[in-house]
Amino acid sequence: MRAEIVILALIVGFCTWAFRFFPTRADLSAMPQGGPLSRFLAATGPAAIATLFTASALPYLQGEMPVPLILGTGAVLVVFAASRSVVGATMAGSAAYALGVWLI
Image 1 (cartoon, rainbow, N blue to C red):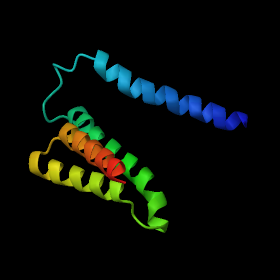
Image 2: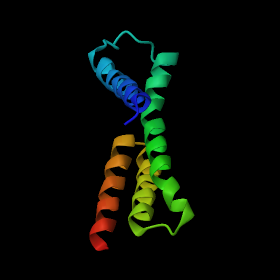
Image 3: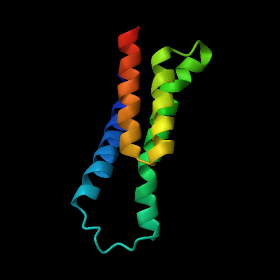
Image 4: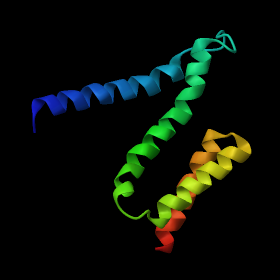
């Protein structure tokens, strides 16, 4: 394996860990409600889900869309539109995707 790939993987892994670890240790109680940091933190959940969805759906654009992907995507869209809950939409999408895999 090339050293550049290993170094890149380590850097990305460290940044991902830091991005997940440090917000859990920070005291955000004094943060202004509508401030830029508050808006940034509120946007990271949907942005992460959109990124993961894009990365997983791109290979299917060259072929036919599988049933689990369609079920999972539909569940995410419906639950998020109804409740505006990222957690609920993620859980519903995971459950619907698993159901689609189980049906096939």
